[in-house]
Structures are given as structure tokens and as C-alpha cells.
Image (tube, rainbow, N blue to C red; front, top):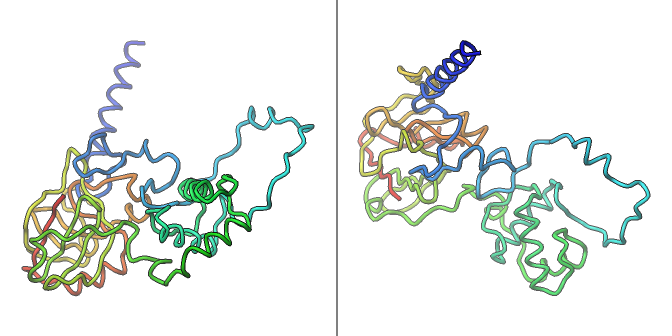
Amino acid sequence: MLRQRVIVRTLGVATAVALAATACGPQKTEPAGSASRVPSASAAGSTPESSPSTDNKPAEASPSPSASQSASPSASPSPTVKAIMANGDESEQVRELQARLKQLKYMTVAPTGFYGSKTTAAVKSFQTKNGLTASGAVDDATWKKIQSVSKKPSADELRPPTVNEVDAPDPRCMTGRVMCISKESRTLAWMIDGKVVSTMDVRFGSENTPTREGVFNVGWKAKEWTSTIYHTPMPYAMFFSGGQAVHYSADFAARGYAGASHGCVNVRDKAKLSKLFDDVQVGDKVVVYW
């Protein structure tokens, strides 16, 4: 028994070392209290991405046997109003609903087209304030009321350039050519002479490997690059502080804020970053701030 415990402990240490060795690549989880304010994977349970700003479609879960057995086949359903949209639906109409609720300040997240817990809560709040049955599902009366007090969403409202709302630029971003990177809003704004040219979502390093803050310059660029220490891909890398760079992350694209980098600024929109990579020149300023 003693020998088995020693083996288990040894394997645990080896696993921890292996997970840590991916600098500027993805980390599996984020410790609590991260300086980059990235939520931990355990806090992400209800959605695959765990982004506070989306209603993402959750992974399917098989029903528990006890739950199915406990349902009484003889129970008669209570009468309900037919729902047009409800929790679990996914459609362009849901995207429009979310955009209208955002106009009305019932939602702060960007439309995703999936009707999840955030949309349900927003609809229920709207129904309560407007004297409607607070079911959390959209029936005909609720939909007509929402349409009457909001306007038809624009293309940008339906599909905004970032999921996260862009923060106000730091004063140091207001002159010259700057990648203005906010840890508060988790966004990167590419700015020229104080004007925002493009924006994209980003994530940062964990508490143990934080992304450095301050004013830097792009030292060098590499369209195709692999970490020489941890052998993880870093496409469209723009290095600004030692081994820290702005680069595309397939892990960020797949898992979002359920993970973290080892210090780099990860971007999940490859097409946007490709365009930014072409625009940014060696010597351009990089500002990382809260």
C-alpha cells in the first residue's frame, strides 16, 4: 500500500510539470485570483467556453437514470402558453431577440443565436417589468412587446466585431500606431492616431505566468512560429516583451476563457489577426493595461 501511494504521488508531480511546460501555449486551468481575471475551468461548468459575455451552446449531457425514473407517467401537464423561443433553441430569430434585449439593457452580452441561461434570465426580467408571465420563454405576447419597444437590429448589432465590449482606450494609446490591449475588457484595439481600426477578443497569462503590463514596442514578427521552449504553435506572432507576443491560439478559439496562456496575448479570430499581422510594423507601440 505504501509503495502504491508513492507511485501515485510521483505520477501527480510528473503530470503537474508536464502541464506547466507550455509557455505561451494553452494552460488547462486557471488558478483562482488570477491577475489576468481569467475564470477557472471549474467555474465554467455550464458552457464550453465559460465566457461571461456569451450564451454559448452547452455540451450535451446524458440524463441520469434516477431523474428519468422519478418522473411520474401519470402526472398531467399544466396548461402553458406556446413558446416561440425558449431555452435550448438556436436560430437567427434568437440572435435578433438577444440583440433587441441588448438594446433595452436587459443583456450586456453579444448575440450568439443560442438561447441559454443568460437569455432566459433577461427575458424573465423583461416579462416581470412589463406585466407579462415571467416564464423566461418568449411567447407571442412577449415577442410583440419586445419588438414594439426596440428597433430592428443592425448587422453590427447582430454580429459585433468582438464578443467582449471594448474598453475605453488608455491615454497612452491615443498617439501613433498602437496595439491597445485592455486586461479589464479582454480586448485588443488596433489604433492609429487615436482612431480604432479593428478590435478583437484576447486572453492572457495565469496568475503564475502573468502577461506583463506597460508600454512596449513590437520587436519582431513571425507568421509561422513554434515555441522553442515548449514546442507549441504561435502563428502570427508579434513579440513585444521577451518571449511574450500577441499571437493566434487554436486553444483559445476552441475553449475560450476556460484556459489561459503562459504570458502571451492570445487571439482567437485568426482572420482578423492575419490582417492585423500584415498591418503592424516592427517598432509599433504595444500598451497592456488594466
